[in-house]
Length: 360
Ligand SMILES: Nc1ncnc2c1ncn2[C@@H]1O[C@H](COP(=O)(O)OP(=O)(O)OP(=O)(O)O)[C@@H](O)[C@H]1O
Ligand SMILES: [Mg+2]
Image 1: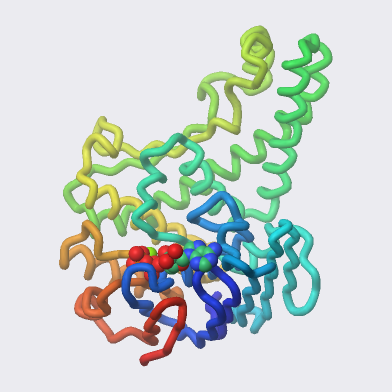
Image 2 (image 1 turned 90 degrees about the horizontal axis):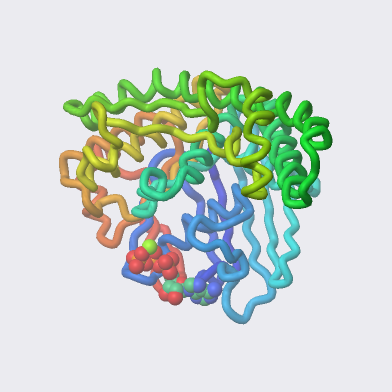
């Protein structure tokens, strides 16, 4: 996928902007507070129906406006599609793809696979397992048509199960639901496991470039003891689950383990190296998606120069360009990126107080 047109209305400090991005690297530059991250956020919002910066989607609607509107022409292997999204202050959201109303946001995500690399990407490693699970599930979602439904069903039944546990239900009553839960949970686990396995193959080459001296190992943990059948676990853990009022182990606790030698990655690598590891993971996901379903991701790269030296900045930009994906890269000074690029940027956009001008 790549965007050939993008229009943004009433989004953060951007009143109205029309961009004609190139299929390669698009450099967005401007002073602090000019609206660079907001442009990336608008693209992300169009692909995901939410922000990567704020959990409160209303905050992205421009102050004093009733609704934000985003529109893009997206070119992919099946031709061009028109994607539009309007979000009202009361929370109502309308999404259209080629004029047809879209009910589920997952259809948007399927149409526009987006990868974000920001200074906050660190959270992938440092925060709880939630962000790492989201990382696996991004890949599992795009790689397998079965994943989304199986995961939605797993979550739905887990929620019911937890309610039954809080109500003090007997094991016999819960076991009825467990049979269905096990079926979906094993499907989810199988897809995740296969995905991380495939990802590892692609990741090795990139890590070899970025962190040649580090023995990085990435592995999948499914959320419960690897020697125990899920059916046995749910049965033997029932008293504990009942006491806790929720299901303690299961596919909702799956994780991605990142280790260097025998240490957790965050204890073995510097901040800059961790950033490179996160970038390697995201680049590997994009490359794998291309291999698996012949679809390009769109990369949103915010504030790339921070904490990377010139050599690694060059290496990272080269790897990103080599994916063949469309890139949106922000910088305060364009030279910080241009000087690290093997070829000139495709397009450049200057942002000043929410106004966007194409300068190349
Ligand atoms: N809902 C909103 N309505 C209007 N303006 C907003 C809204 N939300 C944020 N802003 C403003 O938008 C401006 C642009 O923010 P943004 O984060 O996009 O800037 P930036 O160019 O990425 O800056 P930096 O270089 O510091 O990262 C900020 O000044 C912010 O105060
Ligand atoms: Mg910014």
